[in-house]
Length: 391
Image (cartoon, rainbow, N blue to C red):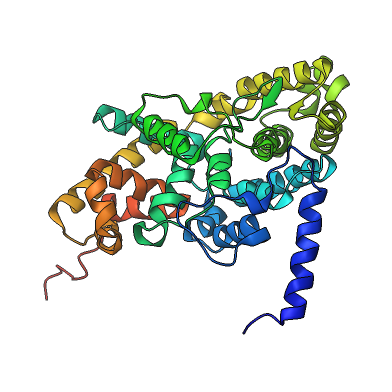
């Protein structure tokens, strides 16, 4: 079906009007750059990217990927799929207040964490360690998110997302907090690819990447805003901490629950960033947020109660990785499913990647449950299916 010509003209006029109303330093959808040309983009380039992302296989796997707390039977604990929705809502709110491109912000937000492994950051560190032992570079979830969209989805063809969205995804590192966020508008798609390649090899630190758009900066800080208070609520539910444990010098500035923390951070950021081409908090709020992140790290993320299964999880990753590699080398279709997956990938992918990197791509894409199911399949004995009883 095709557009009615008169309707199409009115729609385009309205989209152009909205584009022209954006802040002068906003990234316009009409200025989107793709590595491969795509018809019918015009003023909907970034909106099209959101459609591609939510319909991708890697996006669907968010549903069973850990945010912070794994091996927990409580449906109220945040999973990755909820986290990205929270980031998207917070980032679009900030973008709306600052008159930035919400379509771009939404696409970056929805896609930023698809590269996370099963069992969150712990799984990420384990896979990276395995690759480094083999001299195969490193693994970081933000690099893998870029990799999935640009190289892995659609059997090695990628989704052909815009450079601005891919850049925001790879630069999103929410573990890094700064008192001011500036973008680098001189950054080109070629430079983006070069930084990605060098980061994957381990010769360039991805934490030093700077987004090419202010929208990418908005998503980056929104990642922090979305998790710093929510993780506290989850930790309280799991009785790792009590609300009164949070230092008063922090709560007096930010508040003592997620709702207050999020509202304070959004309002302070907007108050200090309105009509500017950079983002910043006030000194008091930034210092309180920095202290809260450090407090969370000590009392939540590295809490000994959370680490009781770490060695078992490490053994599980290594066992599955080794078996996947053996099956890939032999070509035998057995327990892990990797050979079946690999056969569907195109020749370009197979030529460009070593087998250990292929295994990292496959294992990192697993959900928590699928990884554990594969581990049970390869490690737990089964019944022979016959009786040895004498007749």
